[in-house]
Amino acid sequence: GDSVTQMEGPVTLSEEAFLTINCTYTATGYPSLFWYVQYPGEGLQLLLKATKADDKGSNKGFEATYRKETTSFHLEKGSVQVSDSAVYFCALSAQGAQKLVFGQGTRLTINP
Amino acid sequence: ETGVTQSPTHLIKTRGQQVTLRCSSQSGHNTVSWYQQALGQGPQFIFQYYREEENGRGNFPPRFSGLQFPNYSSELNVNALELDDSALYLCASRHSTGNTEAFFGQGTRLTVV
Image 1 (cartoon, rainbow over the protein chains, first blue to last red):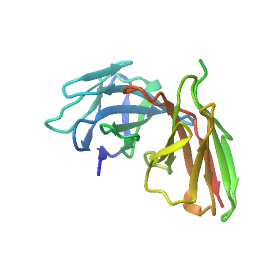
Image 2 (tube, chains in turn red, purple; image 1 turned 90 degrees about the horizontal axis):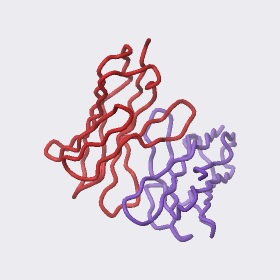
Image 3 (cartoon, rainbow over the protein chains, first blue to last red; image 1 turned 180 degrees about the horizontal axis):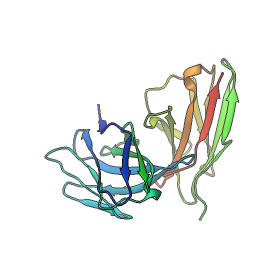
């Protein structure tokens, strides 16, 4: 079945460092890909998405490119802030499917 | 425009009891999904409701059931609670047409003791 694998956390960085969180997926066809963020005590917020190969999703300085050849959707940010500290989830939605399939999440902590 | 709201925010139940969680979908959204998020894990799809009918289900036993009402709000019912049912339960709503974004509520934290 469909699945998403994220890099193991937790990840701890200093402010202004470069961030990469790896995400690879297994799915048939052409799924849509998402990154969600979860701040402490809150639900999930959509950070960015891409619906077809080579699309780049971007929001709040975060970017991810849909790479079908490597089945990847890595999240990047050039300069992280303390306020970026949260848990990040990679997810996919297969064509015609009702559900989102999530990775296990990566906890990110940014130190000042 | 109101977002997705869930109630209650926290709940403690005893093993074997039954629980009902509630979700009000975002204005204009006619599709509601429920997810279970165990501590330290990603959310797992429980089921989805559209036009008051269940139209998709994940790998959860029948003691997990739901309802959707004409105003698109929804309930998740869990019977015969087990300790492993302790989790954050998330509701998400979206519109059924097109590849629209799902908006999540803040969740209900259920603890089974």
